Image (cartoon, rainbow, N blue to C red; front, side):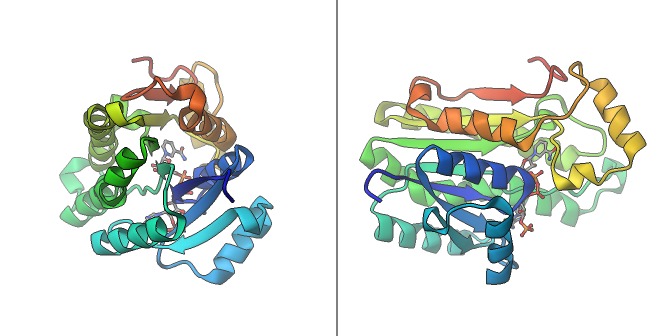
Length: 249
Ligand code: NDP
């Protein structure tokens, strides 16, 4: 336990989150796997079975990342229990796509709350402790659509672009204390949700990507693990794009 780094991964039961949890465990972390509050212990057992992760190296935490007070309390409990949290991966996210003309206030707010306000909720109660311990890795999962915009995703693109601005600003505040803040911006990734798309839609997406394929969740997770590692100690405020050439900034 003493040599393990303590990592929090939100959206850990999802396609990309599961891969991130696996990768961080492999790199010597104990992972607090944050799943939404509607998940249960049975979902956790199923997830453990799917990922084949060692139950001694993961811990479930059922938490709504849009609930500021619940996040504050959960982080405070974790800090008390473990004495430190080394890595935070803000990965939980949703889409509520609609053309802007038809977008409802609820669609706007839900996406901003889950993808962007959750960064405040999860990071704010942790940041001072990371600075005090003189080490921290905060990695925020944005999207290519936050970099280039996307038709029908004004809410999602705004939230994902906001994550990049947030990370750059916070990078200044953490720099002296060795707390880095970076972004991973995946392109379309082969998660179960994307894999379930109609083949013709999927083919047309692939055709737009210079590499003619989607990212794998493991590729995204490896980028996260790199930014979380000691090898990335001098990288902060950066956005690492994994999009097969779809958008070159
Ligand atoms: P998934 O839907 O598989 O995973 C998202 C996870 O977020 C789910 O496990 C979900 O939990 C969790 N979540 C949603 N709302 C909340 C909440 N209020 N509180 C706590 N947890 C919540 O998506 P992906 O794995 O594909 O996406 C992961 C991240 O990567 C997202 O931020 C997404 O925007 C981003 N991304 C994905 C791309 C892709 O092509 N897949 C491309 C670019 C970026 P639950 O299932 O319990 O609701």
